[in-house]
Image (cartoon, rainbow, N blue to C red; front, side, top):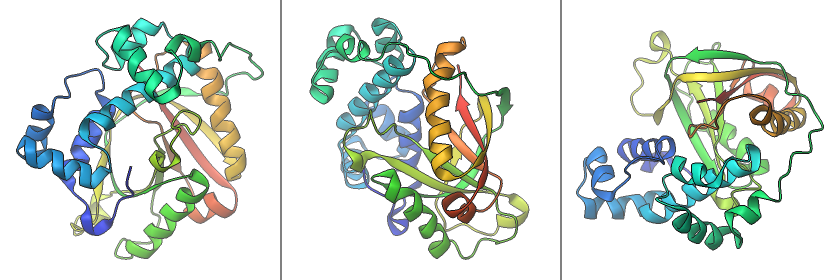
Amino acid sequence: MKSLNLSSYNLYIEKVLDEIECNLDHDLSIERLASLAGYSPFHFQRLFKDYVGESVHQYIKRLRVEKTALMLKYQYNNITDSAIRTGFNNNISLTRAFKSIYNCSPKEYKDQFRLNKKFDTPSFEVVNIDDLKVFFVRVCGDYNYSEKASWMEVENKFEQLSQNNLQYISICYNEPSITLDKTNLRYEACILYEKNKHSHISDLPVKTIRGGKYAKFSFSGTLDEFDNFFNIVFDTFYHDKNYQISLKPSFQFHHNSYKDLLFGTTTTDLFIPID
C-alpha cells in the first residue's frame, strides 16, 4: 500500500478504505464502493489503484486473508466461522486465496499456533467510546521506520494546529508476522480533532476512528516495552476472554507527547475492539 501524500489526499477513497476495513463480511462489490465514493465504477477502479497501489479486488482479497490469519493465530477460530466472518463464501475459496499468500492451507497455518501460555492477560476494562475525528498521516513500511517517519511528518506538515495539549493517537493496522510484504504495513499518526481548537482548519487529511466497545489496557514505559506489552495482550486476551476478534483496528491513545513515545517514556492506553 502507498503512504499518504498530503497533496494527493482523497477523502472519498479514504471513506472506501474504512468501509472495506470494517466490513470485510459485507457486500464489497465495485458498484457499491464506487457509489459510496461518488465515482463511476470505471473511474473509481482507476483512482483506487493509483491511490492504494493495488486493485480493489487485490486489496480486499489480501485484507480478508490477513484478517482470517489473525483469527486463526490468536483465537484458533473454527476455519468455517473465520471464512464467514471475513467474507469468503466457502472454505474452498478461502483455501485458494490463503495458499496464494501463505503457501499453506488455513488448517496448516492454524496448526502452527497451539496455545503455549506464558503470561496472564494484563488488567483491562471494557469501555464504550464515541467516534473520534482525527487529523492523520499514514506511512507504510517496516514499523521501525514508519512510526518515527509518521510523527516527523506530523511535525513538519501540521504546523497550523494548536500546539497546546494536543491529544496524540496512533493506529497500527497490520501484524508484521501476518502481513508478509512489509510495504503493506500501515502506521497512522493522528491528532484528535477538537472543535474549539481546530474548526477553522479544512485542508488537512481527516478520518474517523469508529467508536463502539473496546477493551482498554493502560501502559507506562518505553516504546520497546510497549511493543512487548502489545504482543502479550494479543497472545492472551482472546484465549482468556469470551470475545471475538473485531474487524476494526486497534488504536493507541497517548497521554504525553509523541516525542516521549518515540524517545522516552510514554503513558498510553491501548484500545482493542471487541465484538
